[in-house]
Length: 231
Image (tube, rainbow, N blue to C red; front, top):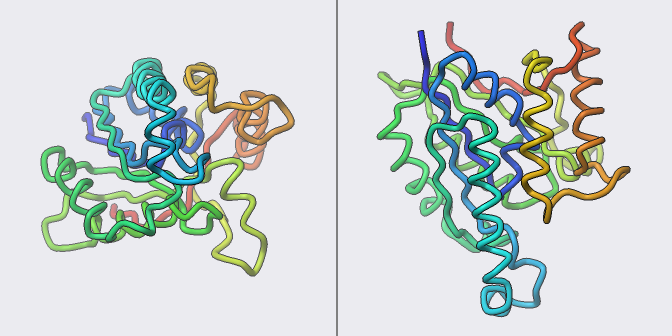
């Protein structure tokens, strides 16, 4: 039986880094995969957001195109992108983020939800996590039977011990058959990936999947922390 799967990411490429191979596996099994990308992902590189918006219109358009290409590679059924300010989600009322996600959530009524883990150095990732806790609260009649938090290389592992909640995965998804699609989707974000040994590189992404797989007895896996799981 097919299910609706919702992935909510803060920035373009987070969805691929965090759970791209799992998205492809869901799509291959006949599930409807819906992806929300909340932030524009670029303007924090400038002194002000206004300056970034004025000078980076071409880059922002390129990120949108990359997100669409990655979605097609992974088999995503629906992609929604928004323009919350990059690395400034804490300047936006949390309710505004919640309302955006709720609008798609109420239309799709997903059974499985994937989003950021809270133990992360990026404030946008943390705010996205907090918004999803509100959207996915376990009210009677909720559609959500599984809520899972993913890691984002170059962000989650940079939170040092004692500084926040550590990412201690307790749910693994075998992505042996879809890891190549994840890498291809990352390569669609040519402006975002970095050369190895940067953790946000194709080589590092494959290495992480190999290590996570080895800890679960398979060739490649993506790792998650269970937020809630109803059987």
